[in-house]
Image 1 (spheres, rainbow, N blue to C red):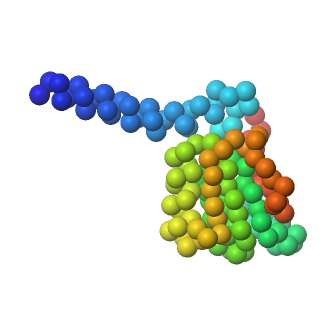
Image 2: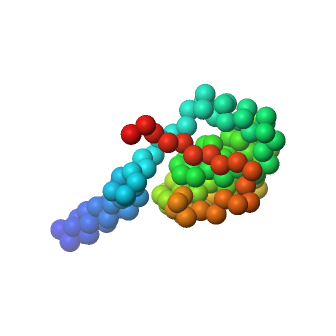
Image 3: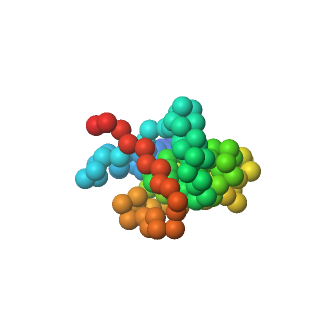
Length: 131
């Protein structure tokens, strides 16, 4: 009984680390890039800008939970590509696109935004924080 409790406790600690580390590691990078969710006003402004400029393909650098890509694909029917370092957020984004019926328009990749090729996109979304 004692060994199984230790094993289960060890697995629990490992699982917590596997989930928490991808959220904490960006803060330790040379350029600190925290996860900050986009709000409704920001999404509306971005959608209006995309409509005015006739954007057909947008890349979201540091796409987080994928809400920008999913919402723009839903609202405008445009192709969006999200690039995110955190594998859990990439997984969540893919799930969200599927649940919202836009997985054929909104795709997500795990990768460093500083190394992303943006040549084939009409627009780039990048939300930054003041600090």
